[in-house]
Image 1 (tube, rainbow, N blue to C red):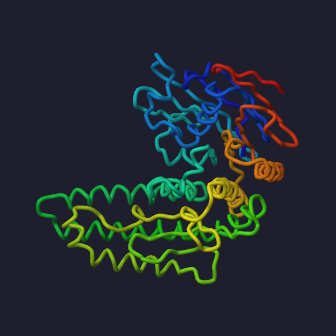
Image 2 (image 1 turned 45 degrees about the vertical axis):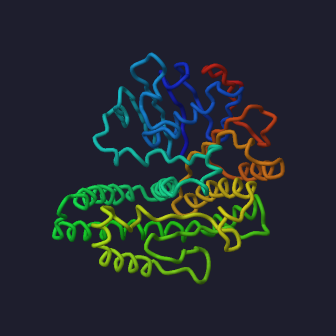
Image 3 (image 1 turned 135 degrees about the vertical axis):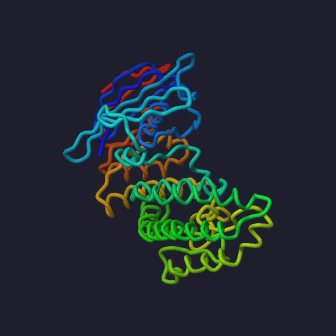
Length: 374
């Protein structure tokens, strides 16, 4: 999968442009605040229908303009698809081959993208909601149908929350909502469990080969209703059935507490996850350098997992990564990037920071304008 070309109009500070990309490395270089990250965000927004820095549509439209448009030709195996997105006011309009998209579910998943930005290095210190969102995106990239169960679960959570906040909660209605929460929540838990089971060896291998082979890096999942954490990639990993069973028992016994506190106290929407180094929580024991390396290893492992488990080669968006790594880790990172075959978009303030065997397309970015150097 790769983006063959992109057309951008009135998006952030970028001038209107048409760019042709190579299937390999596409590098954007230039001083800070010139628009390099905005180019990555244009690709990301086209893939996920939202930006990675701004949730508000007006923030993505060029100042004093009423709308912005992005379109791109996406090649996947022998097929070509033109994706289009129009941002106006507070509304998004998505198009597939020029035809308005009737359902977001039909659109999402056509362009698979994995993003690494400097803010990702702090994901282990971020609020649990941020990590859950990141996990949901990772699972979705592998299984787009995951979005259906997640949407249904979130809708039922909102409906049940309304009942819990009412003056006299209807227990019959709560029973019905609990049954639906268990139905869709169980699917979510099983999907997350299966995903981490697949990802664990990839995370461990990538971290060891690129950053530090003296530590074992593995994912860990924390259920809101269980005191113990589930560490994947070990012989003693708790079964998925135990995870689901613990939640089922908890939700059946938590009715009075939920009514008293007027909120849902357990479920996938309250779970958390992180990474461990040699069995110790990285957020507490890993150095800042190790946490940066683990954050990036997670993204690279996601690429490996998609390729090996589903034959999918996602687009990799890498924003100013050289600023987050020391010279040794930076060199090992580019050695790994030289070995993978996915289309990669990189931004950097200087071409000297790159250690890539072959830059297929080089772009200079200045004041929102882009000039192709090669």
